[in-house]
Image (cartoon, rainbow, N blue to C red):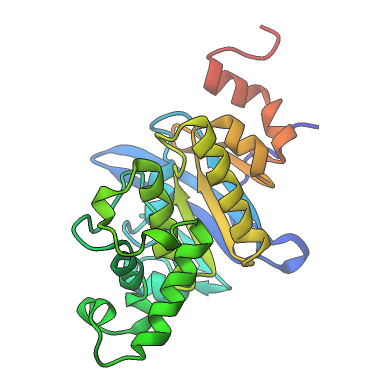
Length: 269
């Protein structure tokens, strides 16, 4: 059975339950159509992946969901509430956090301070107050930050400078910092990029644990198909800013348009 054909307009959640819903979003840059009527739905505590060739619009979609871009058309709903066009800090305060393709840490701050900074949006206070020991329940919040580090395996590195960590450990620190905000949904933008096979295996287990153990919904953009096919429950495929397939890993793997988009040929050609 082929993956579901692209649809336009609102999509009902399975069983009426849908934590994230993107309805027909579109955006252009200087006349170039980056996304064209893209829709998706994500169930609570799901591990959902968005894939596609370079330039297909994956990160642009993340930027719209997280408030960095305002779409020219369409709507983003989170827990049934319209968040279209909200600025990033308000999107985060609603419970959506993200990582980026390029590592974006405070290199000259300690590992622990980076995680404490991740409490900023939920604390509803200035960033400085999240990393300096005054005006808050400092001991409690430090403990919470250390628990985030323990989750990603960096609890013994808390006092080191973030910039001194290996590339793989910096990737894990980004996830710990996101966890400090107590998210309901995490957008992970290429979390295994640049990692060796062993690190990718560890990252895959970590991501699965976010869903299984912490009950967090995860939407993943990833180029490594072995990672995507190994951990995803459902996949949406973009090409040239349009949805060309959506479905289970097996449905997407065998979809002729997906094969053509990635290999430049149709299955059986």
